[in-house]
Length: 266
Length: 266
DNA sequence: TTCCCAGACTTGTCTAGTCATGTCAAGAGC
DNA sequence: GCTCTTGACATGACTAGACAAGTCTGGGAA
Image (cartoon, rainbow over all chains, first blue to last red; front, side):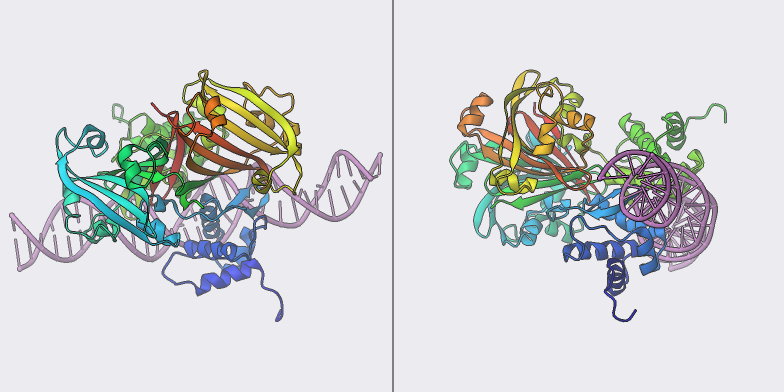
């Protein structure tokens, strides 16, 4: 067996061995398989190595191998069916859903330079539409941040965010034109755990239209989101209005899992 | 122990026992826990019964219990953290992502009466924009179905769908004004396994505007989707233009999972 | 009172098996 | 050439353990 072609299972085992040793074995195997798909060694329609082959090649137990494959299935990368081989799905690569939250992180991974122009940062009593999602008492103070978000210098989105007072206090004096709000909060010990989003289409009002160099009434993709901390407390409520020609959302769904990601529009 | 209050673990075990017996145990347990959350017995922030408690109450192995909890985590219903109790997240109820595919199924679960008016069903050479997602050869024939979709009799969406010839053939003569295309296909043995969606905002062109009783240029939420069978072969490509005031998409994301669902706008 | 730490508890990881159930292709029989 | 049976093989479900690692609380020391 000195001059044979390496099977996908053996290549996966090799990648697992090469990978940094501190991640759990099932995660290392999952990234190894993900890598084989990314690199085109496993192509759409190809069968993934079976449980038995992966067990033999990696020396792991079948339960661990199945955990790795389950992760790929949840991501919509592969499809499993009882009795049939697990196969690679033909699908565009989607970034993890977490990109829905951070404009900065999303722009960077899409290969564009993110930016922002701060229109306003003020503390004032929250209006009902923001007090409710932030779970604030009537008339409680909240910080309101309005920014025009730029992609390679071009305005693509108007962000109108509100923060409960203790959170907003952390933003005063921060560099809001370049850094990410979430990076700033993370550096101050505020962690983001989950978010709720509502996506709809609206016509541009005159103010938003002016900020985005549009005519009033032109279509916008609106992403209203509320972001929560690990304890379930709301950290942010924001209404983001995107130029309709700037982005699209990609979603993949299957019986077993689904993914959603934002992407620039050509 | 004759007059004690039932613990959540015991209530879950009871629901597992009551549930229909043909589903796998881990699925039954997952729905039982989902039910406890739905019914408000477990409220946001509450800890879920621990693995040990569920094992004791249900008689299942810990691996099976963990599989059930993993499902809830993937749905964004609960949050887990090593060492800490699993807790219920505060989030609105979202319908399963699969609703993204079928207008009929979605409308019914939303409590509205779905309908359709067929504008056109013709077989013609596919134009490049539909041939590519359907993986058809240049100039190959495809069935094209244009329908105005109604919610309680009100037009809310224009659907422009294309089907490869063998699939479209199954639709000829079917009741396209009331039934679901997917139901029709399912009855003829065609199974839907996964879908890819691209969501964007566009202005209404004159034709679409007329069908939806809108003025040209008003905002539409566009859902372009391709639906695939179990073998990865494309079954349908459709561009759905929704009245901007008719629907929104809800999404939930957390570090561990995400959900997306369509909802009517008030 | 405050701080720190030990220890109980909880979730995460992994193993090594068994049995169930669906798929698929090769070969037998027509 | 065709259909149908059969059996190897695949994934799914489940069990029963062991150990690792993070969390949280109560009690003792400063």
